[in-house]
Amino acid sequence: MKTSLVSTLSSSQSLRYSTMRTQVELVKAQKERDTGKVFDSGLALGARTAQTVTFARDMERLNGIVDSNGIVSARLKATQDALAGMTGIAEELLGVLTASASGDAAPSVTRDAGKTALSTLTSILNTPINGEYIFAGINTDVKPLEGFGAGSASKAAFDTAFQTHFGFAQTDPAAAGISAADMETFMTTALEPQFLGADWQANWSNATDQTIVSRIALNETTSTSVSGNNDAIRKLAMAAASIGDLFDANLSVAAREALVNKMVGVVGEAIASLASLQSETGIIEQRVDAASERIKVQSDLFERLLIDTEGVDPYEAASRVSDLLSQLETSYAITARIQQLSLLRFLG
Image (cartoon, rainbow, N blue to C red; front, side, top):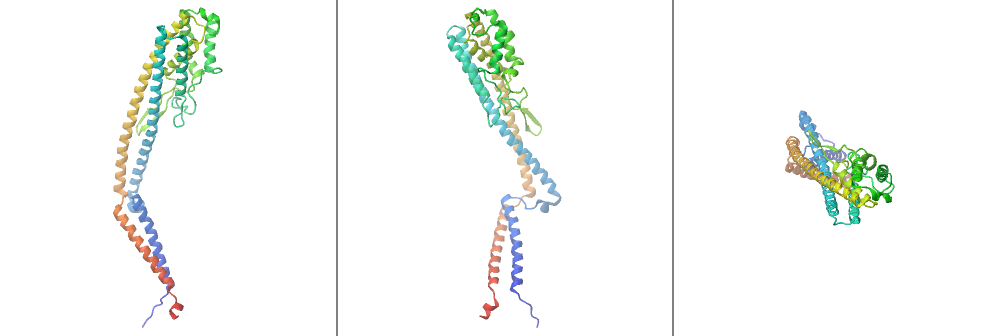
């Protein structure tokens, strides 16, 4: 008769190794249950692993564009709101100028309307959205519009243009002798270049003409911002600054009438251009939304392909986790019983 050696140590070690293997399998099963995918795609899929990696990469890229389009849409929405605000400013100023042209508004009312319009315009343009100045072109970290206060480059350039053209300052008593023809010549030869020429960026604007270009689809890009150098903004600033500043001067009635008549036309052009900008921005918003919808469809397709390729049955995965937990608990219980076995306890 042959006897075999029975050792509590060997039994304990055997259960220990079995428990470790069960723990490893449990970790894999839990991950498969939680993610819905195989634990090791390379082991499970073999040569098809490259295909799933490609699907996953393309899906991440598409989802990244969708996230980027969300930021673009927020910027375009803020741009639309700002353009609507500028349109409101221009319409209010036009109303006051029209009343002034017919003699129904006092010079002080007209002056204050110009100053208020310029102040509000500056505030809208210089308000950051999500940490960036949306009207600054690609210089999104710089305020696009300089102020028109004392000591500013824009005010100094404006005063210099007037002084150079007429030979005296706006507040000089001699300004009362400026005729309508003189004022029209000043506006054409000296005032317009300040706003519609190169002097705008030299004295008024920190914005770039180049706007932000965003990729809204894999094969589609578009401009997704409006520059503060747009003609509509320049014209509105010119009308507001001119009215606010020169109606504080000692101008003759004829010169003021010429100024008002000119700026009525300028503000009207600004309103039309702002409406066009709003329309263009709205079209871009629609393109971004449509691109996002197309990309989501593509991303969903890649996701389904990934699930078909490396997905696991969620019910089977949950059942496997449950079985492994039961095995582990049983192993712990048996191990505890074996560790309690002792020859001294048996003999005692």
